[in-house]
Length: 327
Length: 94
Ligand SMILES: [Fe+2]
Ligand SMILES: [Fe+2]
Image 1 (cartoon, chains in turn purple, red):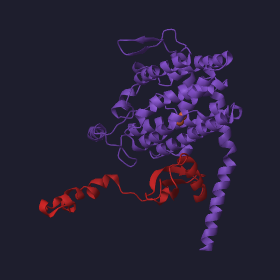
Image 2 (cartoon, helix red, strand yellow; image 1 turned 30 degrees about the horizontal axis):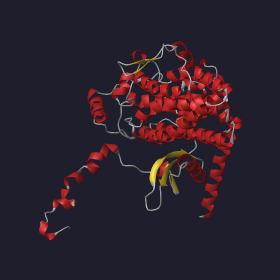
Image 3 (tube, chains in turn purple, cyan; image 1 turned 90 degrees about the horizontal axis):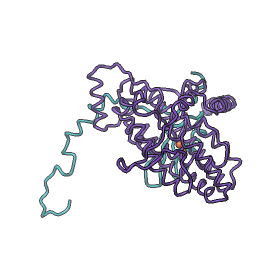
Image 4 (tube, helix red, strand yellow; image 1 turned 120 degrees about the vertical axis):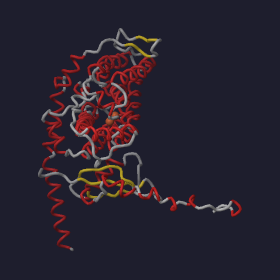
């Protein structure tokens, strides 16, 4: 899923003006940059951070949904949810591999996630309290992620763009299975419909926050746009998401929890009420309701898996030695 | 860093009749686990019927800084293309 408006990029760079201009000319000509090509340090650092955050988000994003696999209400739902969570793991791996082409190691990235230096999308620091949340996440959270990720398929950095093409091909299933869950609840008993509405109430605003701060407050947006890492601003993407989602909620007979939401004929899109940016920054900085649990779960998985990694490496060494003797 | 799990490049043949194509990379302790991981990560939706894994360290790549001297000269050798030669229409398709 889930790249978020980049948090804390570092686009400073100090190469010669000639070098920077030649690089910018390549970008402007829509040439892709490949791993061994010369690139400004700021470009490299921005990508390492963005792709790393994106990869971590995919992996941490497996946790809130994994929470419901054993309690899915039918075999059909369970198979779909398992497949979706497995896809998210795959997305994380495509993205880690893309980041590694820039010279950062998997181990470094894992360490940064576990010790809190690396960020991931704020959306995963909210809890999944009911089965309806699994539907709402697919519908809204994967929906928001798709808006973010489609333009990334044209990102100037080749390995990132290629990873995003694979990811985007798989996301549509995520959103559709989620919408189907919400639709089933919305068309069910009054209790089920109330469960769907409650879930929408809790996830709507955090989903809008996934696009990151308003354009005026987003620190390194301009440089990312110039380098064609980003193609649309946070607010443009958020607007697209709202305009696409409101009719989907109307179809379900559910109410978007924003009293200020109304169609603006002039701009051909919806106006929305104020977003609680204090909450956003609190959650980004690790004070979300589930932040501690998420990292604890990742740390446990990493620590519990240590003996498996060691055993696999020892076994590989032994096999290699045996093969040498046999030759 | 000690205990780093080796990197492998993954190539997949979408179907017989086509070449294996690079799709990405994977970490695995050995070639057996690399094949299993590649299958799980890169073929969840019928993307292929054959996988190659190659240790990334075994790949030798050309230097992008030498791309011009390596590849630009062929641009001038237009006589390597069929359209360089004038054949009268009367001769028919050739
Ligand atoms: Fe994903
Ligand atoms: Fe997804």
